[in-house]
Length: 135
Image (tube, rainbow, N blue to C red; front, side, top):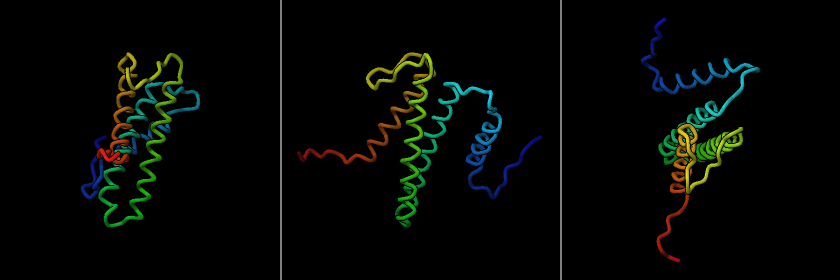
């Protein structure tokens, strides 16, 4: 069965991603175990949502500061959720520790840690005032 995209829908990919999450939520039965791959995929989804909320906030904030503050709160909470997923990933059995100076071995672990460290770096760069040498 072919699906058609509503031409008036301005955000078809976002709607498709939401439908995919909804489908996965229904498919995850009580007997199914979430594993590191699940957590990695959820972490990727949250970090991408985090970036999207950041971009939306940048466009909304100038004309609607109150809405911008609400989006900033959502932005922070998405980061907190992604951080918690990353921590949960590393507490599952046989998961190596993530250290900023040396990423752990293994492609799956490397992916989530690289994404998490890059996201944290981007957040610090955007939210921390630049040091202009006025100490």
